[in-house]
Amino acid sequence: MALLSGKTALVSGIANRWSIAYAIARAFHAHGAQLVLTYEGERTKDEVEKMASETGGVATMCDVAKDDSLAALRRFLEERGAKVDALVHSIAFARKEELAGKFYATSRDGFALALDVSAYSLVALCRELAPVFGPRASVMAMTYLGSVRAVPSYNVMGVAKAALEASVRYLAVDLGESGIRVNAISAGPIKTASARAVSGFTSILGDVAAKSPLRRNAVADDVANAAVFLASDLSAAITGHVLYVDAGYNIVGIA
Ligand code: NAP
Image 1 (tube, helix red, strand yellow):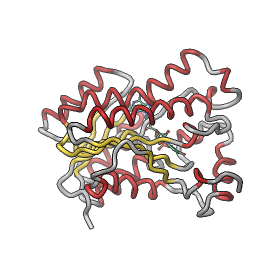
Image 2 (cartoon, helix red, strand yellow):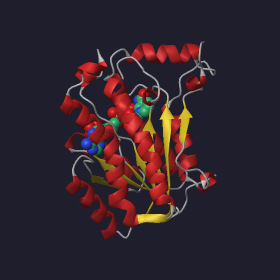
Image 3 (cartoon, protein in one colour):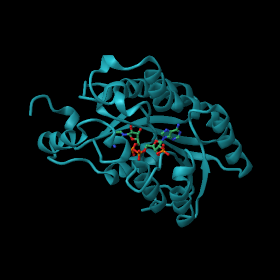
Image 4 (tube, helix red, strand yellow):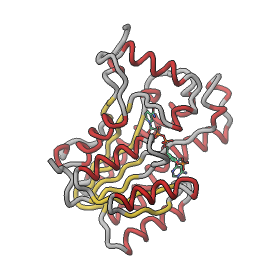
């Protein structure tokens, strides 16, 4: 069943084929969406352009930490007359040394950097792209349980995800009057480049597999299927929500 035919989806955050955004873009394409993919810089350009050409989509550069880059993205869409029906924010960054050890050791500029790239960027993207959103557009951001629980080494990224989830709620109110929905998917741990930067990530994977109700980890395709649902009209009355795709780990008190 093609749930997204006739829709254009902008997917950010593909670094390589292990990225959550890569699985989402593949699932969106399988459900009939037209893809606009963004990459941050030269390092990921080839991989993202390859995927765009394989799926009949387009790719363009966007560094979400730069306002002129966001404006260039809007112009890219306007020049093509594209309306964005689904927007996937799948972006996060914190310095590796701040994803280990004590949270209180986080530097002032490391804190600001993590929150800027990982949370403020969603606000800036929504503001910049508001003129090119389709009438019932669906925006989604990727978050993690470290926003509401203290997870070892997740540190400043947990604070950034808390800001991201709060931003989702405020954006849902702002954009709701235009019929646009804004949600977050809280994914369980998945082995990607970003995840591997978190000290002790492998033991987090083991803990989830042992203690989650489904006794397994979620995989990128699980997240992608939830993203298809959120992008589709099946979720038309859902906004401001954080949808956990984590094999149920978030509900467990004592396992
Ligand atoms: P990933 O493959 O490393 O993706 C992270 C992406 O963020 C990369 O494509 C990276 O681009 C991009 N990025 C960083 N700074 C950027 C900037 N200034 N402008 C534009 N793009 C930028 O890792 P992932 O695990 O799929 O992460 C995707 C999202 O899922 C993140 O929000 C992450 O926090 C969230 N998440 C991940 C997990 C997990 O366990 N993997 C769990 C829950 C939530 P470059 O590589 O080119 O820098």
